[in-house]
Length: 532
Image (cartoon, rainbow, N blue to C red):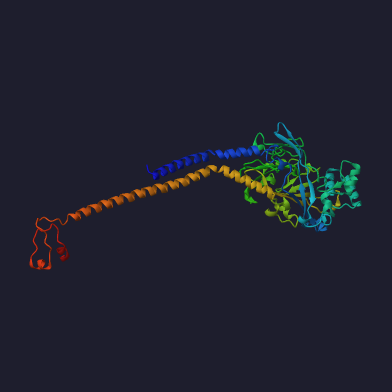
């Protein structure tokens, strides 16, 4: 066997083995299963996992942007006209949210934690000074009191109305942004506090929320099942709420929005429990995005989350009392706001009925600025970028016994909205890209083997073709030599003499004087050939 044949056979054997092994590994998904099992083991809320420390102390900076709707024509509105608002802000605060009192329960399958939040003003990311800027907005304490007294006797309402007028309480108030946000001593609440000490005399949209937590959470660590990673087991000791009018609406579903299980699918719905919204919401896949070189799936609340019960019957459970429902795009949360007529929505009533948008001039909903979304890496489930947007509104309507409301028709009036944003920091993004590169290489290692086998297959085909070409050239060379030998031998015998007489040198005289004899040569003489 020649050296060329040995090379061809060896290449063929190696090629066949690589293709067989590679294709087998690809079909069986051995390496992919191995790396997925590794991810499921590492992505758990246990002290030995890679993500536990970042769960306790999230490295990405979180910013809270507060926007307010300043009312420019309160007198016209109270006289029955249409309110006009202008958006001011953002007033941006850096949010710090480390987890405290972390305690493992039930053999490490659950973990207890508090999540206090503190806020620090960031002037370079803000538009205005909250301690200086003046805001004219709805007097929420006064409206809450009027709404509470709506079911009381008319005489009592009239007496309270007269008292409110005597201390200068109006339906609209003028305060600094800082006071409306972080609290001030309200004169009406102070009088009520003297009668009912349980009523706080201070009011602010974020009053007592700086440095405090939203409740006691117990999370599933994902030790038993990776799909349970970060899911809320109990909130304030409850496995379900009791505010709403159906069991489904009272369910505490999903995570707190900070973590999600790995190996996400585009087809699944993700659930988040939002304590400030008093309910769980779901998010659906929207599109593939890229954040700092990291691939991610964007999930956002679909339109049916805040649809009216007429369009989505499953939302009927959020009507309290049962049957008392609002339209699409808004959710009344009075049940968890001490009875105040508070309504939540997306900013500028994005995805809400037109009647809410058109009731006030100055609202311009759009997807880019007002959509809530999460960008999650599908392999690890880690949030790469988050944008949580929610608007606070209040219901204004006519209340008998309060003359200042006599021209009001029921309206959901916008107060402010918040944009809570977080994007993965550069160091964490670099680590994430490295991790994803390793996962990709390991998962695609069988494809690398198949690729090497394919390359060797091409080399094998080239070698075989060249070998056949060489053999054909050798055959042609042998045939040519044989033909040449045959013709040479024939030429040597073509002029053999048959006479035993000595050959006489021909001369010109001989050729001219003597005729040529027949039979002297087998073939024609050279002279005869020339005559032809």
